Every structure is written in structure tokens, then in C-alpha cells.
Amino acid sequence: MKRALVTGVTGQDGYYLSKLLLSKGYEVYGLVRGQNNPKIEFLHEHLPEVKILTGDLLDVSSLMRALAASKPDEVYNLGAISFVAYSWENAFLTSDVTGKGVLNILEAVRLYAGDKPDSVRFYQASSSEMFGKVQHVPQSESTLLWPRSPYGVAKVFGHYITINYRESYGMHASSGILFNHESPMRGPEFVTRKISLAVAKIAAGQQDRISLGNIEAKRDWGFAGDYVDAMWRMLQQDEADDYVVSTNETHSVREYLEIAFNRVGITDWEKHVYQDPQFFRPAEVDLLIGDASKAQAKLGWKREVDFPSLVTMMVDADVERVANNLV
Ligand code: NAP
Ligand code: G4F
Image (cartoon, rainbow, N blue to C red; front, side):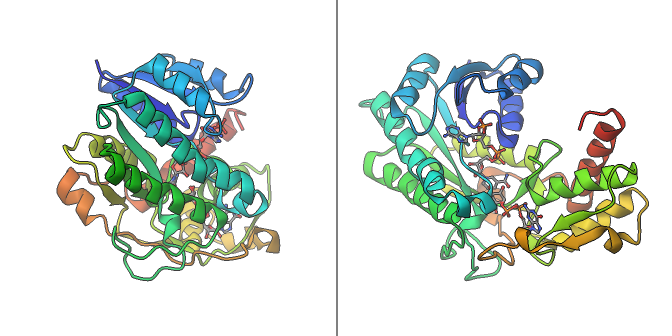
């Protein structure tokens, strides 16, 4: 039985990745931060087989302890401050957790692995946000990085320090440059879930409008359940490497709104949408569209859920939650 340690296990990807690893027979250890984190209850209820270890990416000794306790074959580093808008207001914290936190766990893995540096396979959750002010369309592994937010800058550090540990110490450390991926488990601060939740409440007569920022921004949106499979595939390769994971399509927030409102029978949706300056960003990433041909060719990965199905899945899940008073 293989063992995996997952940081960020209480997040969206932590949920889908843990489910995938458990279905493959892994023993899964999840790192949870903080004292009495309320999300532990969710894990006990929905992923009872995951063994919880406490630790924080800011505390190397806690990472060393988690490695000693889990003795992992694979480490998936999903933990991060991941909300881009928040990263301007909390740039130091974001740099520490999302950037330096990667160095902390890489160093912990390196020390733990001792004279067999490639005995623990390592996955780093890099991001399409690193492309920022895009220098090439579509974006691939070789596109110049030009981050536009403190979060993006921190992710660039995490990305290059992962490559550096691979090249310096021979670690099996791979970096997945994942484009936006969503699901009914997405946090409500992200635009897709903010919209699906609001649409469900508007349809139920509980709310009249939604306030948003830049609805012309374009993203390459996929389904989180498909993307965690790419993470796992990366760590099954003989050689560690970096891969873009995307759908190779781009859609605007406006298109997402249209499909979401149409799903609940609202066609004159624009009257429910207000633009509020507080949701515009100091520097925007206007367009993301990935080229995942390397992941498709080398990992045999492909996405299963297309954009309209993703929007529908998210709206339907929130309609059900609203009907059952769960949100
Ligand atoms: P998420 O839902 O925001 O989850 C982030 C996780 O990081 C949570 O479990 C959070 O714990 C944990 N965390 C925060 N600070 C930590 C710390 N100091 N020490 C340890 N853990 C900490 O994010 P996600 O969507 O699942 O994304 C997973 C990873 O992929 C992140 O690194 C994200 O930046 C990256 N990524 C995401 C996307 C996407 O579209 N979803 C795309 C590219 C890359 P709490 O629950 O306790 O807050
Ligand atoms: O949903 P978002 O907040 O996601 P964003 O900024 O693209 O970041 C997500 O994807 C990254 C991968 O590229 C991850 F690395 C990162 O961790 C995170 O998961 O915003 C998407 C777009 C932006 O252009 C934003 O300006 O939607 C626009 N938007 C318009 N109104 C809004 C809103 N975003 C949010 N969150 N809230 C709004 O009201």
C-alpha cells in the first residue's frame, strides 16, 4: 500500500485528490493547520479514511514531524493562501505561505529522504496565475512568466524552487501548472462559486442581485476532479517534470453568468448583476488559455468535463443546497 501526505487537504483539491488516492488504495495522510480547525469535522464526515496530522507550511519542524509520522512515498503540496484578491491585502503572509512554504516542505522532504533524495516523490501546485500578463497565447510550459499579483509572484518562487531542488539534489519533484479548476467544493470567494451560489439564491427568491468586478476577464476553466488525476499521473512518471494542465479553451465571466442564469430559467440576467469597484483588482490577468498537449501526450491525461457541464454541475449543486437550507 502506497502512502501519500497531502498538504491543503481541507481545500477543494485536497478533497478530490484524497478521494482519488483512497480509491487507488493509498493510505492518505492530510496536513491540517491551526488549533481546532473547524474543517477537521468536515474531513471526519466526508473523508473518514484520511489520517489527520497537524502542521503548518510556516513551521518546518511540524512538517518534519508529519513526514516522520506518515512515511510517505508521495507528497502533494496543495497548501497555500490561494485567493488572488486577498494576496494584495496580505502580501507578506502570502509570500511566506504560498512562496516560502514550498521551500519549507521541500527542505523537510530533502532532510527526511536523506541519501535517497528521489525516494519521496513531490508534487508542487503551481498556477496559471504565474503567466499573468500573458506573453504568448496559448500558454505552455515554456511561456515566459509575468505574474500580476503577490500570489502569482509567490507561486513563481514556489515553481522555480521546486525545479531547483530537482536539479540540485536529484529529487523527484514535479510542478503542475494548473489552470483554473472548479467544482461544487470551490470556496465561495472564487467567482464561479460566488455566481453559482448567488444564482441559486436568486432563483429561490432569497437574493435579488450579485455584485461582481471585471466580468470580461477570461479563464481556461476545468473541473477539479479531472485535474487531480493529472497530479497523480505526474508522480507516476519515471522522471519528474513540469506540465501545464488546462482545457485549451477560454471563456469569460460573462459567459459563465449567462449559462448559470439560463440553467435556472433566467434569461434577462443582466438586471441581477452589478459591478462594484471593490471587486476589481489592482492588476488584472485578462486572458488565460492553456496548451496542455505535453500532459496529454506524456501523461495520457484528458479532461472529461466541458465548460457548460461544469457550470451546470455547480449551479445544480447550489440549487440543491439552497433547497435543503445547507447554505
Ligand atoms: P484552497 O481550496 O484555497 O485550499 C488551500 C489549502 O491550503 C487549504 O486546505 C488551507 O487550509 C491550506 N493552507 C493555507 N495556509 C496554510 C498553511 N500555512 N499551512 C498549511 N496549509 C495551509 O485551494 P485549492 O483550490 O484546493 O488549490 C490547491 C492548490 O492549488 C493551492 O496551492 C492553489 O494555490 C493551487 N492552484 C489552484 C488552482 C485552482 O484553480 N483551484 C489553480 C492553480 C493552482 P485551511 O482550510 O485551514 O485554510
Ligand atoms: O475566481 P477568481 O478569484 O480566480 P483567479 O483569480 O483566476 O485565481 C484562481 O485561479 C488561479 C489559476 O489561474 C489559481 F492559482 C488561484 O489559486 C485561484 O484558484 O477570479 C477569476 C476572474 C478574475 O479575473 C477576477 O477579476 O474573475 C474575475 N472576477 C470578477 N468579479 C471576480 C469577481 N473574481 C472574484 N473572486 N470575485 C468577483 O466578484
